[in-house]
Picture: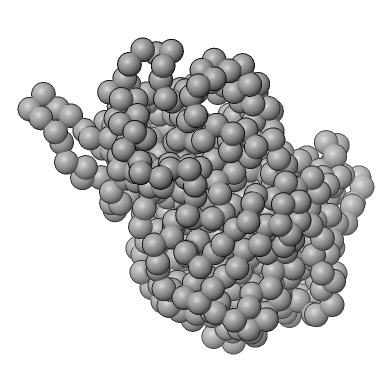
Length: 542
């Protein structure tokens, strides 16, 4: 077959890598490339932002699959299915970073079952989806998961291309060998953890938005039928029971307008059907039906939320316009509806507090402070406004797993003497263009603070009354006043309540950035610790 007669237009490496940092700009350029009609007869487009090249044998393999499809008209996207395998943290992390990686968790999150990589798109569908508005993303690497059909019947999983060696075909033994030896070149070697840590937030927030606006611009109606269970009580290694007053059943309204009718259950067991699995604990099963895709020019408003929140999420930000939207999206994706989000803008100069996305839910409250006073000041001001019995601290460049608030609140409910609930976390490395890249899962190892080094608890859900009982985050003066507030508050609370409540699975995603205040000030820790020890009095720093 001649190149001009190909069934598939190859758009791998169609947009420069530097544009990945701006998903909207990236999508607009991809639209321009598609509208050039390089191959107008090509009904399918090969595209994934992580892919930079595809070999001719792989293209032939994909074209043969298309030719053998009996009735492909309803299929909009084809995803590559790679054999799931246990994470090989050491091997992949050294590949990404050339340095020692984070140790894997003692109970790492189970894979969703399939490491699905969207690769082939029907041309008209791709153009339509790229043209609509979409919610914040950490980078364009994850754009495919934002624009995939919500109807799993429109997604077809195809086997990964066969691997070849000089001695013949090679068996797919791990995701690592699949992605690196499949005839496809990648910017990064995709891992299930890398994809699932982000795709879970995308899937859950898209599901909620669609359910909040049935019939909007195309009559999108997601009907969740019997046998489809969506819940944060998914059994992933360890079983966590949900509590903290969440009533889940017929007619439950989930904060941002999601109403789940009869036949949708949340609990500690999940019935897994033949649907496409996108994330930790999120499965879009065959009970979901779709009319047509939604074109969203504005975010559908959530109904008024008059109930007292159980969890107050505090987010202190300064010049974080680029990353704040994704952090907020992870809050909107929470399976636990009884939250409020208090954002404290500490005199930002980049329009952080003016993001339109911050107006998308009445549970979000923005408070502006000027001039810049530092994170401790902002957090304590927000604490005075918080209404929840628990306070969850979130940084503007980090994000929450959709089940974070539910699992941490349930853990705290089960440990009435604890001042802090914490757990395992995902560790990511911030990059300039590719967004955060997965480094590994950090298990719960307790709080450490000695003269040599410190490792504060991450995440941190506080019992509000106990946090207020020590006066909030310790206020300090001097050169180190804006450093190590996380260590100081943990030291103060654990001195009086030494046993935290623990969730043994990643519920928080932490991004390391070389230009952050904590990273730049790390060398000052020994002097700070010495001064901290001198100032200890009555169980917490004065």
